[in-house]
Length: 65
Image (cartoon, rainbow, N blue to C red; front, side, top):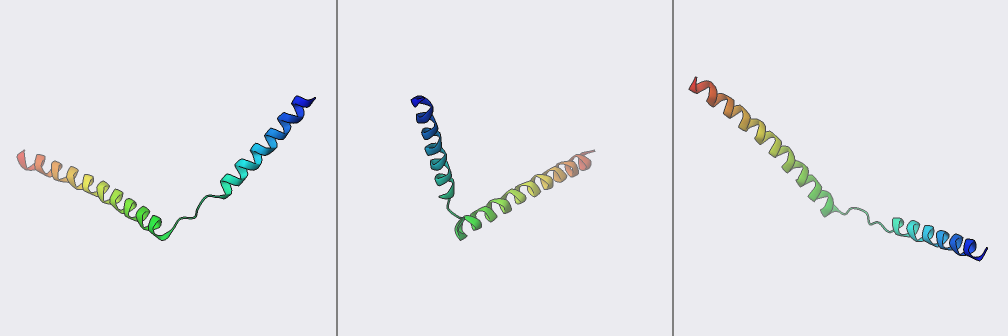
């Protein structure tokens, strides 16, 4: 009986701890938002550069034919 009570108390305390930690998450600041925007722009630019590279490669193959 005592083991069940101790286990129950431990589970309740663990639940409170998890709930408390999840509430402590900081909101995103302006620099983090700007960093994400830069990352997205760089990714899009990289994708477009790959497409351009493929087109140049295809054009070079056509010229050599």
